Amino acid sequence: MDDKLATELQGQIRGEVIVGSDARYDEARKVYNAMIDRKPAVIVRPTGVADVIAAVKAAHAAHLNIAVRGGGHSVPGFGTADGAMVLDLSRMKGIRVDAKAKTVWAEGGCTWGDFNHATHAFGLATTGGIISTTGIAGLTLGGGIGYLTRGFGLSLDNLLAADVVLADGSFVTASPRSHPDLFWALRGGGGNFGVVTNFQFKLHPVDTIVGGVTFFEKEDAPDVIRAYDAYIGKAPRQLGAFFAWQIAPPLPFIPADRHGDPLCAIVACWAGPKDRAKKALAPLLDSAKIVAQMLGPMPYPALNGAFDGLVPPGLQHYWKTAFVKELPDGAIAAHMAHGPKLPAVNSTVHIYPINGAVHDVKPDATAFGHRDAKYATVIAGMWPDPSQNDASIRWVRDYYKAIEPYSEKGGYINFASEDDKDKSAANFGRSYPRLRKIKAKYDKGNVFRFNQNVTPG
Ligand SMILES: Cc1cc2nc3c(=O)[nH]c(=O)nc-3n(C[C@H](O)[C@H](O)[C@H](O)COP(=O)(O)OP(=O)(O)OC[C@H]3O[C@@H](n4cnc5c(N)ncnc54)[C@H](O)[C@@H]3O)c2cc1C
Image (cartoon, rainbow, N blue to C red):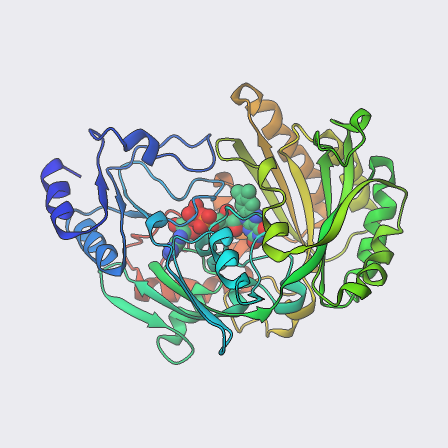
């Protein structure tokens, strides 16, 4: 964007307009994944809907595509793009809880940390991500898998309405009664349809939970995975839990001589009565001899922030993902071959359950295309040192290749990498044809293309 247009835009908005000559530019173009190095034409930090409308209209007039940034966690770095307008919503963090109705409106720049802080004051929560620094926007629009999924469904299953600025700068509220086609598409179609300035969610009573991590020897992973697979589909819905590979971090609850060892783990959140936690967790925690454990009652937001330290901003990221319908011996052998080779303490592999309340929702009720899956696997390669990029990326790819024969063709769009773009149709699954039609109606010019893209059809 030339300086004259940027100055004009600055005159129309309350937020910031940052171009290449600005001292803030290099900091402002960074996203969470340090591998991403892109040079947008302009970065706009709106303070509210009026700013977003002005910015989208300015982009339209200047023929710029728009990269929307919520929490900035997208591994392919979709919150920034060469030559585009970046709309960085990080100044839009307003939240209003209606405790009586058990609903909340939260602006598009909120993280789950912001959100949980606000709702916890009322003893309420909804399904969000497991790390507090992830944005509510990208996570919800693509799905939303977290500790509370089994009880309350995906984050997008809790969405009641969304305020959206469309590609031409017009404003709509999408809900079951208003623009229902757009509302359907927003719930699973990612950031393809416009800038969501405000999200309305359903809330649930969740206050103190019993949560944390239990580590086991890597050799015991087959027993742990089999116990998890046998139990997690029928466990009480107040239990959220997933299997993980994790290098033991240097934390006091882990014996010092085990720091740095690759281990497997069960990460859990019991959101039911405290005195029933032990019984609910037993089938998972009794599956093998425990090496170390940090598990106990804590406020839900504390668990949401418990692992933030392992994934600070500025790491290198390369991830792969697969939906899975079963975990046969061959799949477990593939996990055994690659899981213990995690390249850094920041890297992890999670096998999340897709069951409980997620399966209560009809497969075509939202655009989330893989409700029939039983698990969502993520191979999350994260490491600090760029000189390790080739070796770490190879680990992710080799691991994925080994589990591919036991996986669905599509993976979860929120965990996919840049080079998974050619798998868009499989990733969106059964929803893809309908999403293409709705994309053509709301964003024919594909202005919002920096995402797991739905091409207008
Ligand atoms: C450390 C880490 C932990 C994670 N944990 C989980 C987890 O527990 N569960 C889970 O389901 N996923 C998880 N994810 C994946 C996460 O869901 C995706 O990375 C998601 O895209 C992040 O959303 P964001 O707003 O932070 O990202 P951004 O990079 O800001 O945006 C991601 C995508 O959403 C679009 N977008 C963002 N904001 C808006 C908006 N307001 N309106 C329209 N489009 C928008 C962007 O254009 C982009 O295409 C995790 C990712 C990381 C890096």
